[in-house]
Amino acid sequence: MTEALRRRAVEIDGLSFAYDERVLEPRSWTAGQSAWAAELLDDLPLGPVLELCSGAGQIGLLAVRSHDRRLVQVDASEAACEFARLNAENAGLSDRVIVRCGPMQEVVLPDERFPLVLADPPWVPTSEVEDFPDDPVTAIDGGEQGVDVALACVDIAGHVLTPAGVCLLQLGTPEQVDEVASYVGERDDLFLHVDDVRTFERGLVVRIDRT
Ligand SMILES: C[S@@+](CC[C@H](N)C(=O)[O-])C[C@H]1O[C@@H](n2cnc3c(N)ncnc32)[C@H](O)[C@@H]1O
Image 1: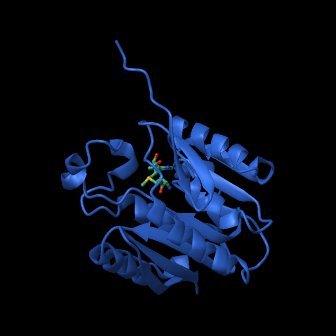
Image 2: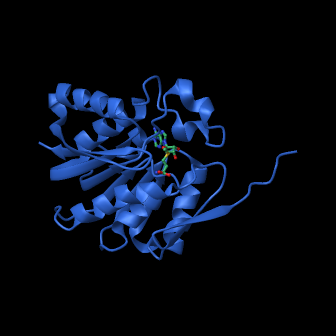
């Protein structure tokens, strides 16, 4: 018999985020990525925010709650999309949050434009996934070096960022930052450059700007 799913909630910066074992537990340190995004939104061109790999949605919701921007959240997991919608509703933000469920390569169109892209891809190397038995594999497995999905996020950012737009990409290690920086350096066609990196309790966030 299948064990019943146990719905839980975690509070981060005054908002409550529901989740269960089908999605990654919202981690409190990721509020640092949201805070950086909120700082940038004061000055970025007008337009909606795109969040790739949004999971239960806390990073994007915390980023836009004190701005009036629309937020488009994208995740391939049906369960993550259900929780992102519920969490937007609980935060009183559902009137300006749209959740698109599906692989980001399919549900983000190349002719869309966003001044800010948030990306929180899986970044655990495949060989280390078994060290995290409580986390859903599809939420954490980033491929051999852990950057496969992160590089796909960079490709999308290269297509959809407006002039002067910014992508804030979450990664796990300084080595992954180097991998992403050399990829961005090689891909002249994306018109991006790495501008800054901030280190948080359990991960890093790379700022990638439109060149
Ligand atoms: C590390 S979790 C991040 C979840 C949430 N942002 C957080 O920090 O708690 C990565 C998320 O990426 C999603 N994902 C993985 N590959 C994807 C893809 N190709 N397209 C869209 N979502 C994807 C997974 O379903 C998972 O929810």
